[in-house]
Length: 160
Picture 1: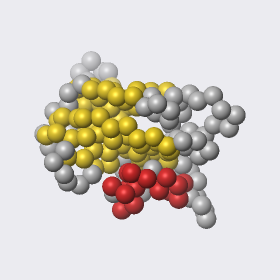
Picture 2: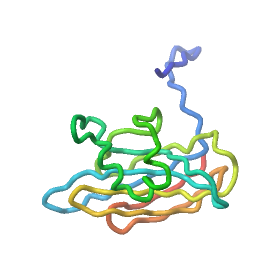
Picture 3: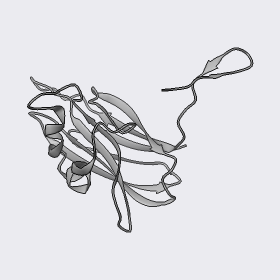
């Protein structure tokens, strides 16, 4: 539940979650006869080795029954092997519905220890392709960017 802060002037402002920066992921519009929005996972791994930390996973959260939306998360093969299979979904603040083409922001949590990391963003689309883009990331966040070639567009890291 989000709490609001009432300022002296009577204006209501919603507090923002603390973050160490922002990742902007662009999902390109692909001209195909049957387009499905991609499943997507974003996670970081320490450069010197260590456990992966999932920042976001977008999938068909509304699909239930014999073939729930989580069934196809294994198509995000690298993320799945790095820890996705052990993530209990839905995960508050991490999981959400798939996103349409456009630019979408993912906050970098403020509680990530300072250091060198690699940001990975992986997308997989039904009747489409799969793509993994990796970008060096330092915390505190510094600006950075990379770009996919098919399923992902620009991946931009912005310092806070």
